[in-house]
Length: 101
Image (cartoon, rainbow, N blue to C red; front, side, top):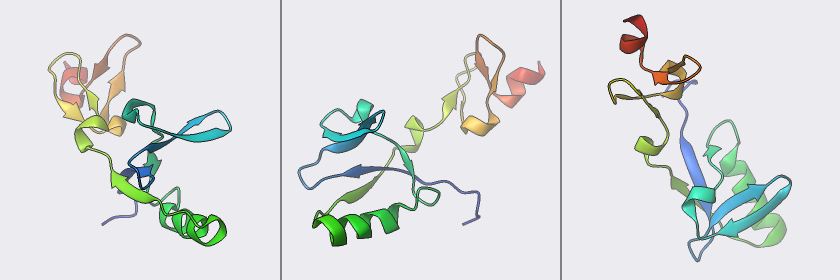
């Protein structure tokens, strides 16, 4: 795995709720659409979970984000792509092939 590979995850509690935030207010919700998406490596998720267990006695679970929910969809051809490959022209998200047209 390269250093640039990003693994997107949710953090869930033992009853299946997702960790979400509203500004500085962190809370758990049953609504996945409101869940905060973490970058497993960049956000040091493993370290944070260990600290939560040690300091607060809570056990949280890392849950992978469905990759189809992470990318952008080309508004012209419907292709799914990584967000870094998408080009936004001010009105639409385009894949590299449609951008070149």
